[in-house]
Image 1 (cartoon, one colour):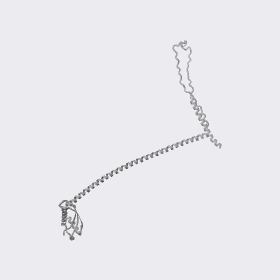
Image 2 (tube, rainbow, N blue to C red):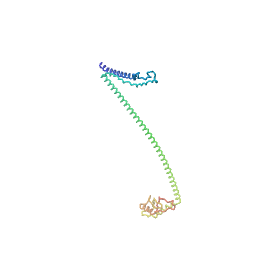
Image 3 (cartoon, rainbow, N blue to C red):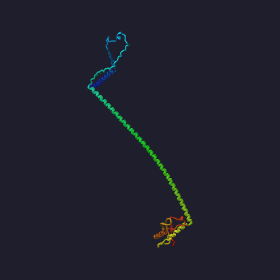
Image 4 (cartoon, helix red, strand yellow):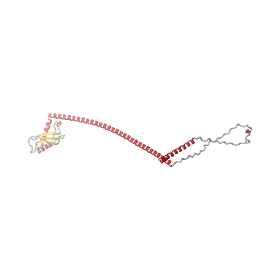
Length: 294
């Protein structure tokens, strides 16, 4: 165990000694920096003059003019000569202290790198969170815009549907009014026709017209041998204006096929059919009961 203690104490003592030396060097440099520089020395020049060389006025003591003090030119102060910096004794560093310092520096470097990596990771995480928040906000804004657009489209569709329903109701009301007016007109025409028919029937024009038609058809009928007494056939005749026969259909008839064909041919031979005495009695579709006389 003592060797383990010594192995741990020696690096610690080396590190302490190294820090003390660094502090001493820093203190000496600070003291030298703060010391005042030495005063500058001034150089004065002088000339030797003999007495015989002086002017007579000076030798007799009677100056010709007021003496003027000579100007003394002071030389500019010279900067102090740089002093050589004292050599700082470098402490002897043992191998163990160097290893300890290197390990400490490596640990500090790794700690700094770890801190930088952690800071970069935090910044990246913050950037991702910010991007996610921005994306969520953008998605929320898009959802709100979509909801507003859908609401506006729905309101527009409802307004259009309401307008269409209103137009359809107006069109239906107009159709109903038109149909009602047409029915009323048809009813009035039917009533008028019925009234005219009744008037014509009362006047005997219709009976006269039908009797005229039956007489004309009977005159053009060629009786077949199979015709029996009491023949009665219902004829459905379509005629154009002017009495031209368009079509003839034989309804109930107590005769055979030859009799039926002979009656139809009689109607075609009677075309054009005679016109009624009163034009109001003319009918395009006639129902005639054909009963030929014996």
